[in-house]
Image 1 (cartoon, rainbow, N blue to C red):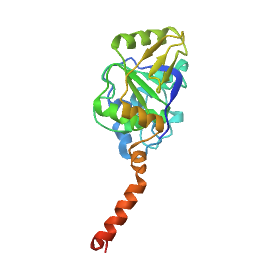
Image 2 (spheres, one colour):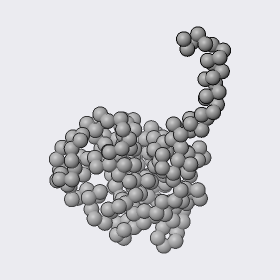
Image 3 (cartoon, rainbow, N blue to C red):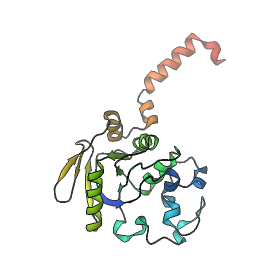
Image 4 (cartoon, rainbow, N blue to C red):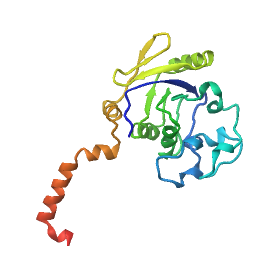
Length: 212
């Protein structure tokens, strides 16, 4: 998993509450269990004017010019600004895979659905809860200034505005550690490789009939 330290990126404003995981990555794309390749289909039904299917070449598809991901001022953005209850609906981890594959490193919202929130840190994305008033202010600033950027410093737990203003955010200590070190569930397990091997060897020696 990609390590997370400091992200300085353009903010993409998704001004809709209750964005569910089927909107983030529609159900027809769930056939694949690979973590990569979902970026072109992120917000597929809002992003394109036709119906998308797995394996389809998206380069020639008609785009919705009004959707935020298709607007030139937000190209290359890595910080998604959202409204309350982001990531609600089904628990599909594919939603986080699609965001990560697109290049999103940070999602800021007043509230998140619990399972989606848990999945973010396991896939290298930092999800930050901020007061609704601060989120409102950020939406206003993004609208006023093209190319509006924020600097998110995970070790310091700060968000810095272009004018120098800095605010703090809360993050679970364990999630912070995993993001900074780039450890997903598999990575955490592999930290105990020696202990696992020792247990297996001891088990084989003391209960050889289990392995015959």
